[in-house]
Amino acid sequence: MSIHFAVEKREGEARLGKILTPHGLIETPVFMPVGTVASVKGVPQELLEELGAQVILGNSYHLYLRPGHEQVRMLGGLHRFMSWERAILTDSGGFQVFSLNELRKIREEGVSFRSHLDGSSHLFTPEKSMEIQIALGADIIMAFDECTEHPAEPDRARESMELTLRWAGRCKQYFEQHKQEVPWQASEPGASDGDPGHSQALFGIVQGGMHLELRRECAERLQEIDFPGYSIGGLSVGEPRSSTYEVAQETIRHLPEGKPRYLMGVGTPEEIVEYAGMGIDMMDCVLPTRAARHGLLFTSQGKVNIKQARYAVDEGPLDPACACRVCARYSRAYLRHLYASGEILGQVLNTIHNLAYYLDTMRRVRQSIALGEFSRFISGVRSRALSSPAHT
Image 1 (cartoon, rainbow, N blue to C red):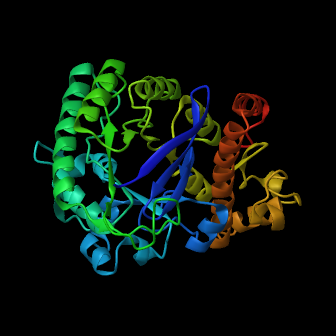
Image 2 (cartoon, rainbow, N blue to C red):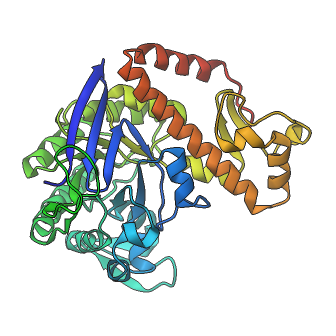
């Protein structure tokens, strides 16, 4: 047994569920903050717990380069290393290698690349990605895939998809032979503390570019390999948002009902609500943390670009409807001053608010499904998105 997933309630395509992992329960739909190098930038782990983060992401590529997966293993695994007792998901590194462009070369064996840190040469294969992620000890790990560029003609997208499928089979084979037994930490029915015999969970990744038939084929063939969960990758790589919606919605139709669905690398607060409405269970995105560092903040009244001079004498809270510790204590004028001064506290407070806003948005999604009010909730989100000015 690796993870246990159950859908508890549905409203339309939206679904309320639970994923039981060795390090705790994940209530879905869930938004997962990105902690690329075992750190969500600027936010300590106790604050992430306070904000209600149930699961965070680490990245195999970055942790392999620094401090090294064997060092993390020696220090007790990623949970102990970063002092995080809740669930962790690790990305395979496929997207990061894809992003290196001229620094990498793809072939059947894997991807050879040069480190962005020091230019040293490395080779990532499906087996190497599994080795790294098993050493890191995350609860959920990802198969190594090729992230298809955009735009990609049908022949090119098929070639990439076929490679991803072959790599998925190699990942599954290596994982089954080397998977790490981990004790359960979750105090849930059917799980006892320290009970051995449970392994990490390996998810497959659906590719196929913007071509719906390839997406269908990839989803169906991945199910023949058989994974405990399925991810939709290769989106948010430059395509129009309408295409992202279309591909995600079509792909979901071909994924199994009884397993978690993870849409990788999306999106704005309004978009994650839409994806939850399609039946997506898990989402992640660097947008809340990255935007925060550049002074772009998400609020119930629309986006706020805190660097603007208009906020220099604004004594009001960033978002009057937000109960986070930033909105409860600090004014827009102060946040604007911190940004203008280059004070690192400004980036920290901005990040805390954005994460709080994202996590609270998904908490309200779950609550609305539980109460049978999701249709009303998503209608309200859409109306506010149309009427709220973007303060940019």
